[in-house]
Image 1: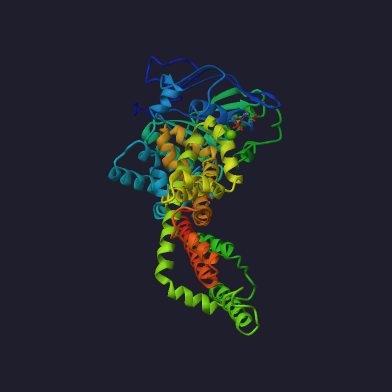
Image 2: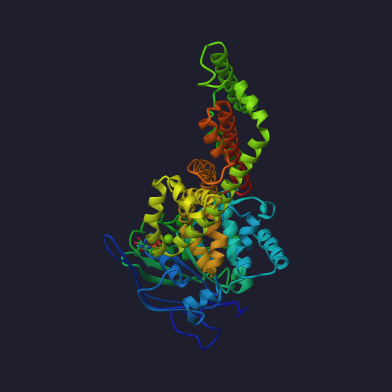
Length: 297
Length: 281
Ligand SMILES: Nc1ncnc2c1ncn2[C@@H]1O[C@H](COP(=O)(O)OP(=O)(O)O)[C@@H](O)[C@H]1O
Ligand SMILES: [Mg+2]
């Protein structure tokens, strides 16, 4: 387990394994095809990506470009058609069995017959954590996502955003070295969303976890990430990988709300935006407009 | 309190009550009890009137008072018959529930088991189970209650198996992904996801089966076997033209069936009120 937090942008796309800890995720020539009634869908083609330990990487791109599929392959919820995929140097299956990652889906996916606290406790329970330890851990997690008073409620008594926060607390329960998050903030209102973003940056920095974060929102990707992976659809490919150079915040722990108004932030938003749109249609779009929260939905 | 609304909806559905505008919930819940009781009293009054004043022969249709008199006169026999038939029904219901749930779990887990059992279940669902009564009675001897219990068990097995299997198939993909991501064992999967998801379906199956268990245990007694249950006493009373006594036993059968139904309905509502079953995204 590495507690090291990279303070500079990690070297992109090269196999640097020797210097520091093992890469969290290593993907080489990955392909995924789905056989459907109407033919073969090329969900992912020729994906190469390295996520270093402790690195925060966002996947961004239009719907159907294979972001969720890539995340599911890393989580071993689906198997690649071809190509190599390792998680902390092991096969994805081994990493899943070793519980090397925590995961949050786009849907909160809470068990409706369990209280909020029992939902957060689920992974701890499944992995045999003693009940006293479980209780303190759950209390800490609920405090972190600001849901302490809702511990004994059932999910159907919570708003969509609150349910999502429970799911995020659950994904953090075992302090995983790798966090996989598929549009976890999609259901949140803008204010909660910004707070959760700030919290997530802090949590990732505190625990030294690597994060693979799927999002539709450019500002969100820029704010959170060390690198932003831009994808394009049919077939799903990586079209660009952009390291975030945010002078205002060299270390991630310094990413706070001031950053959202820094000029380097707007520059990065523009860069991702242009990469996403193939650099074309942006002549009449100055950066400030992008900063107001343009996304591709 | 969303759960209470659900509970009320269930009562409403159960008694077929409809909400009429203008009544307060309190009035409505009083009416829900008072209305059917009133109707029952009116029907009994008309019945009594027809028999005593209207000239319908007491032999053809015994009056409520004469049935009541028989009920009091034969009270110990009525009680022991109800206990006997009730025990057969209860044993059948318990065994049928256990079998239904376990076999549904097997069928949900292994496709091949599902495919093999499908035709048998379909056959059991359409064949009147009591048709087996004479066969089972002679197989297990004239002084054994086993045949009746077996029939009650088979009859209750069918709806429980079908409902439970449907319930087991309701797990949502996101929940299955979650359990897989946590590397849950198949036992943990069953305990933490599949069974709780199926819980409302299992309870509905048991409620449906409870009436079937009583009916089939009772009807099975018409086809021989040891005497002393409600079914055989109805049959012998009617055969010896003791119609009032036969009706007294019929009344006890109705009470027994209602008891089973209400007990399982209460169980269903109690469990579902404690733990919500849906509403999460
Ligand atoms: N289980 C599946 N079966 C068939 N096609 C699928 C399946 N999962 C995803 N796809 C297809 O793969 C492509 C990528 O999907 P997805 O990874 O969900 O995209 P994204 O998350 O970027 O919106 C889409 O065209 C989608 O229809
Ligand atoms: Mg997706």
